[in-house]
Length: 546
Image 1: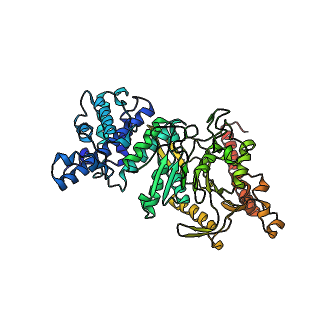
Image 2 (image 1 turned 90 degrees about the horizontal axis):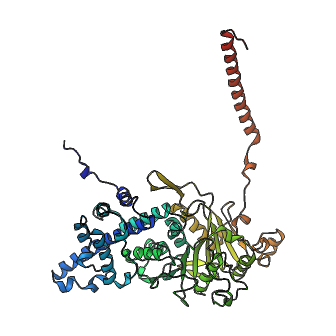
């Protein structure tokens, strides 16, 4: 029987991706290595798509340069045109060249020149300044070259590979390094809750673009039409802005992220733009988002009728007011994440929270399990805000009037599903994840609560509760029963103040439990007495009786 050679062994995709990561280990910063790896992966996938399209053109028109080199023939099907020296086959062919770093940098520049939508998206002059010798770069090229649809029969190989690298680099970086990535299961939950079937989807702090990717995956899962969804957003960090542009571009997702990175607060690139959906994970508790006397006449804040400005020391409520200013007043819906402190904080933010609630914008507050994020181990909150909570039909569902009501959900006990991520040799991170069935349960609870059929929803201790805003919203029976309202709780949005807590100590059968403990103690004491007796006999046997 012939031996199975190492060459014939099928290496798992995860191993190939891991080898791509470690090819540059010890060379440069995590950030530079991330951009180098993801940049080369972009070139590989762009090259594969180009060659596939080129083969189609040859089959259709023959090898006529006028057709094969026509940029529009590629762009029309979301394929980037590549000059010969920018094609992956050329890079692989020259992988051992002394100037391979320069060749890759030139390829990046040429792709941007040939494809205006990519302007500013690719890492330029990176490889020449990386500090890696040609053998290291060749090793990286060889590993990236193993990633192919022919070899790995993944339904969405591009998405799988990009998600892997975005996740592991977020997990291995510092707090700031990891802010470009929101766990995929959390983004999927947001998409399921707000249902972005058609219209404009906006993210004011879009990171690497995960919200946009999942919004379109939602459309695909529910057999919708991608052409009915428009993507707009912006990002302040220039490196993250490029990551997002690459992430969306290689997946063929049309988008408008502005011509450059910019702060949403001081340079709103989509001023006066109205959107249908917002999905966002703003930086938690961002400090110094404006100067002390800045933006006070901005239409997003006090000019919008709010009585106070969000404090300079924390941007949480600035993000909320900004997003509310963008939503369509008739049907806009947003799902965004905030640190739990925003639920209870007082002073200016407490005033703003009360005013937002009195405008009836908050529809649901969902506390997520701890340790889901790569930049923090705290529990965070998903806010669902809705500009129209009145009765109506949404995506074929008949909804009741939810005016002056908020649904509270607490998922902190859902911490049993843990995903282990290898972030470096010998180092692992364990993070809590939400399963598809858990996401479906949250979605079902929310949909049942919204439904005109009120028999579908009921409050569940330690999980969910529907709460009315003010005492004036209560029925006479509810008033007599002293039912809790958000007003009676000082406009706090902490679910723990409303959801019923069960004292599980009361469920203990003390008689049975004490009998069990009594029997255990008898056994322990009996063993102890036997040990002491044996010890005394031993000393007695050698003439030293105790």
